[in-house]
Length: 189
Image 1 (cartoon, rainbow, N blue to C red):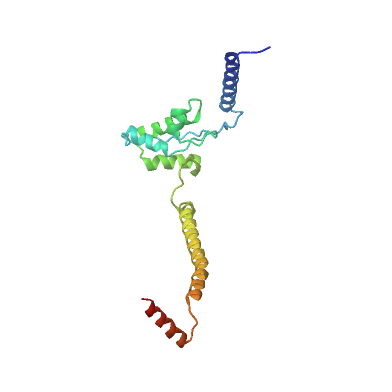
Image 2 (spheres, helix red, strand yellow):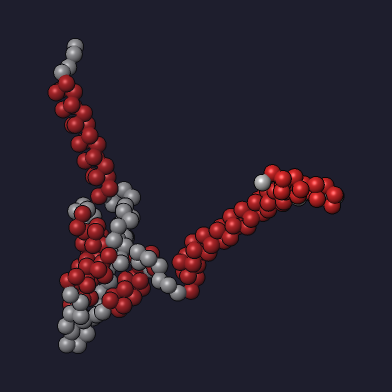
């Protein structure tokens, strides 16, 4: 029995759709890699006479600094909630951010609230304090050290070649031989 090209392509597409649907279904269940306790509510009482301190763009920028805690992605809250519509955690984190913004809290206070609820792992970039400075400085220190090592090795490897060149260029001759050589060079002109 032979099947045509169209039937073959339809069957391959059907298998691909079934596989993707099965993978998404397992990622959305709490039995999959997403932990049931991935979301922790971050709420603070509104400030007296609270007015939002952040614009929508500033709020979105703040959400770019917070990491989604679903456990299946490594996206920030804004990107996860606007691209992965199956994630149950990032929309909840967005609601918490909206509540804190409407409660009159600023960026540093909101980041501190999320940090106290989730720990430092909620931040897309570690805070520049304490031991975290090693993560910021170490790549540049390693690059500088590597450059110095390469420079020193190149100088060491090129030195014997220069010394050999000098030895070959040095003439060992008596004063009479040098005078004869000078005369021969004058006569050549």
